[in-house]
Image 1 (cartoon, rainbow, N blue to C red):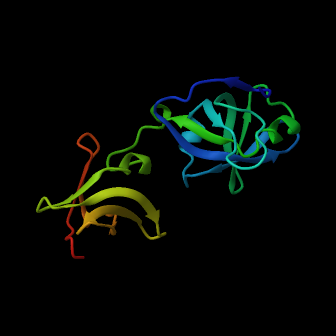
Image 2 (cartoon, one colour):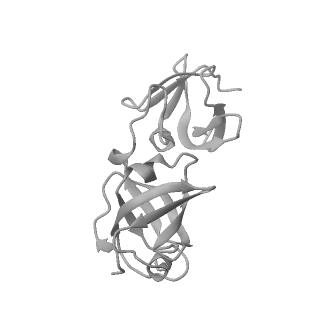
Length: 187
């Protein structure tokens, strides 16, 4: 196992939040490509779980736990340092590793705030109780976020999109795994 890494089990609630891009400087810091515009999950967790890069050289196998000393924003990127990763060579050996964080360590959301990962798979139903599909993914268009749903219609899988804004979204209930919208199937 590489310096700083400890063999581990991936937590049942692990969410992939980014990957290690490259070494940064000579003291063991590394650049992180965050999959979120707001990388609070990376900053709040002091234990990252790593899986080897999907492509390229594999410098470790299995799941590894990395104890984070510090993670922060620098210019337009996220940088981090870890215990026992003390030089550029050790940081370079982590290049490409996929970063997972336990969902339970994510910061608590405010009212009417949701992590995208929590919305994936939720059923979307309109006010007339017509099922419009289930959330497959979300898209950020700049102006707003859009729910992308899949549903079966006449034996074919189709996609529907609904802007994820309060004008159309009446309620999000994570407990019942349901989103209530003011939207019709033929829109």
